[in-house]
Image (cartoon, rainbow, N blue to C red; front, side, top):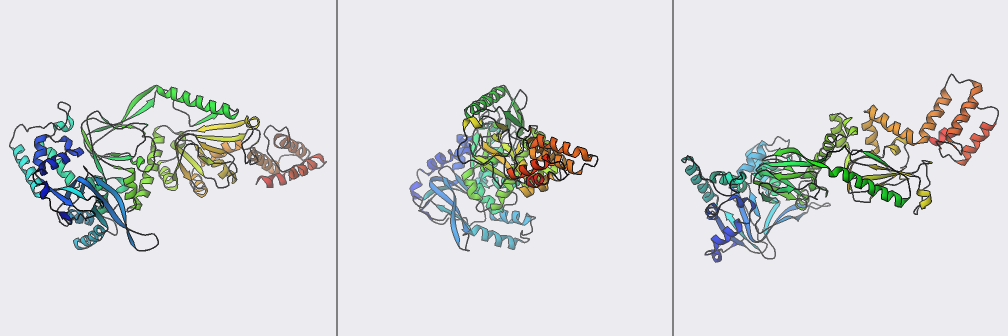
Length: 594
């Protein structure tokens, strides 16, 4: 191992150093003292000077545990504007952490099994590609204090496993060790060979075999997955302990290596919360009180909850991937049904990993979008349930998931650049403005309380949508949309909105019906079209019919008023006051609407 100095100073106390360090490892907590002492003999102590390279030159596996100091794992990346390579620190492994590299022969075999177009087809090509990839990886001792490592001797470890297996094969009643709590099942019921087999899978970097089965990592280079495996940490949990708690902010992604886990969710015994909630109009302070009261009402209704078991998970199962990209509360709780061993990577380390595997980010976001849509469908979202499964996948592919903090204004009245949003988490408030008219002048300052009392508010919950009206009318936003919580939404650009929903006429018709009810100018346009092209209307009733439309939409006392420019109204009123009224009397009004 390059850079290693003399380890003589650790001679007399090396066993104690090894044992004390191994006890810090989560997966060593299942070992009893006798087995731990046997394993300690398989490790050698090596000291590295400041910044020394830790090389893995052998064809065999490579497994070390950090005893003192720290180890930096870095890679070489191309700078954006040149081909120059710069070192990028990915993570730092500290005392109690491990670094493991799978055997090169195994990596070569795995690369040759890859079915992608650019995969090597011969062992020579695979070794050449592997050497080029490994050349970009850097594992070095801490540049300030160096490090002390425990290096596993694979030959001694293999002999220990063989000895334990032979002893167990000749015994009718295999001895059991107390790695877990006796009588509770789980790790405590494992035999010594089983524990060593699990230990062997860890030191041989078989975590990579779990990572490669994860959908958003399956296309990542094997050497990159080895790097990610070294950025992971182990977690040992006892039976009954919680790994994740519903509602808590998460920042770790987990893979189960050993044991059984249970996912549970708190569900309300009452009726499901509606997607849209209309708020009573009032002053700003009254609205705030109303919103708080509604939230308390909802919270009170959902206090009457029961625990619903979602699924059981075993070795190879994974969860928490949403936490890798968004700081949001956990959507369910995960509890160990028996003693379990897991591996996890935190958000910071994974974001560093994405620098060397950027394609994984695209696949991960696609996976997260589908996960959110699937959850909303299971919760009974009527809007998404009306979309066929294949179209849902298309919706996920065409959309972008966006993240908004509390009190963020997603849309403002008058904004010309608008999009369509499907809320997947959080609550937003839609302010439709004054109910007396849909077209309002933009204001720079705060509106007066007296003028604010007739504003219409709607709360949108997960599964709800907004932004379609501006896209259908081809106009600026008619509403203000504000986050009342940390919100996530799927965002569709205007061209994608029209392309997607034009193939779903039922939903498109629903959008138009809602828009027609809220935007009176749409109804006025339809009335004008009927008036212009209605064949059975007699000449003597044209004037009467035109007055009905004027009184309904354009008069000062109109029940469904539409704002028009003074000039257009003046011309219209002059024509209506004359003796002869033609079918094109509303031509200027129609043109202004369009």
